[in-house]
Image (cartoon, rainbow, N blue to C red; front, side, top):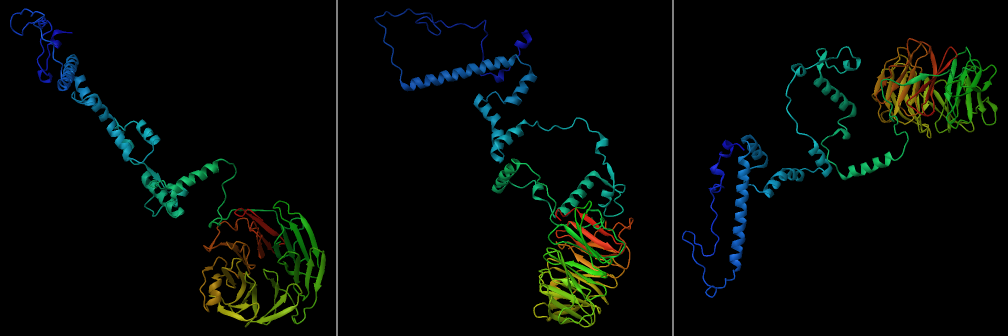
Length: 557
């Protein structure tokens, strides 16, 4: 060690003066030597006194003195070692390990203290705390690029998805932060708020533990866990064109009736060429099952019974009602109904429960027949001419639309008028339909307006207000049909080509992708129907084609 470094001393850090190693004088350990006088002679053995036994207090003092001496020596050795270190190293050790007066226990406690306190304050688990300790502390960037701090603008006009999020014309460009906020707003608006899985401040509860157990059970088995929404979305209806229902028996005569079988995957097509045909529905070839020819009997309307065992058909110029028994394969004509004095039987309706048959007569009469025996039960009369009629979903009421624009509600059992109201804005009624869930009543007029009412308001109010007036048709609405789930209302007019629309319920908005106007293959629509579970939609036109579509939202027939 160089002499100049050895001569460097810090007297203020020392506990006392230290003699030089070379000049240090060893004390004389001979017996009888005094601290400052000459050596004395040892006393004879006879004159020596036995040493006194030390007391407990003296022993404690000796132990304390020995400990103090050990600390003094340790401090002196530490100072000796520090004298050999550079000043920078000593300063760094003081910052890291503290002052020299701290003993080892205090140093260990100081190092462990903040970490233990942080673990006690936080409610995280030991694994999370250990993971947090493994993260290095965040450091300030050494160099910052000025271009990174500039906000990059995103073009909103040239992207069709971003263009819908613009609130005004001035938002042609937005920064990334503003675009992110706008996306969050759109997501929360679509979800009806912030979903529970997106809440970051949600504390874990006992129910969360149960959900984790359910997730563990879910992950232990395989399968398709993704399903479509139960409610039909509005806007665009996912559908595709299928092979014509009557492709295996083409005709040029007008299609008067098309209806799906209530229990089997079969569709019936009736036309003015005196035939009723049954086809198996597969969406590809639709093979023909059977055709029934009725001589000199242009079919005005054909319909399945509620149980699907019979087919009823009427003609355009006859009072005969044909009943075809599908199980026995027999065709039964009903030439005359006792008490029924109508010269021509054309329009009729079958009740949903299969108990009644309602025949529209002349001079405002509606005749109620028993479905099983085909006998007259009673008649109901309205003012003016009956334009259209239908049963309620529970088969307990009859709705009749008159040519004067009024709607009558009749009780089936008592044949009494329960209510009568004017269809708003209607001068001449053409069609009427009720939904299968008992919620809606739709009335079509000659001006093309279709008013959608609530059934409750039609029964209780004398001047009910429609929920929505659908004005997408410009000619008379001649056909109205609800689907099985009461989510779609099909409206059509036989006075203009491509005049058919599908209305979404309950939003009462029209699906924008039907019909495809560019193709123009629908022509004049005279009849429409949905399959029992709304998987298919069929319509018949004047060209003899029964067009059929597959609705992808509904999985069943």
